[in-house]
Image 1 (spheres, helix red, strand yellow):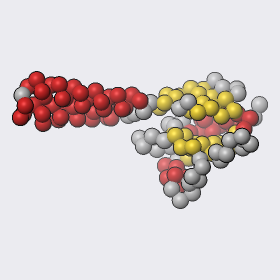
Image 2: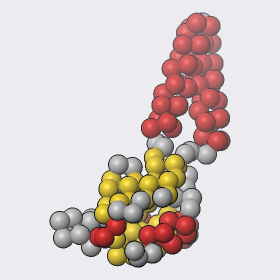
Image 3: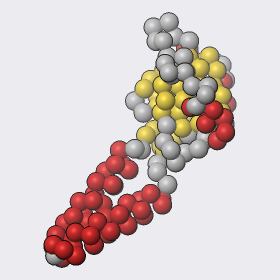
Length: 144
């Protein structure tokens, strides 16, 4: 029904390659060309792995909301609120509930707050970073 993959912005991948080049130059100058190539490739590879692992998917079907492997039955979702940047900051700051589940990426500035009422799960709400907050909120607030 709905699926969104949340990727890092393109500038992150470019900065990862630039970081690898910088590390290569730092290690290549004193230790030689081969050491520079190896250390630069390792550094760029580690950044790439970190960026790749930060990708997550939000899926919504008729029964379940799934975000980064966390599943919530739609029957337990009471409401969903789209959050713009200031509202997301307030929700993560002064208005935060320590029992909530936060799925956040710093490069995504909008989010949804999904209120949950599940007797078996004491999590009051999910905070999910998304680039399509209004679309997700509209979809989850529809009953039936």
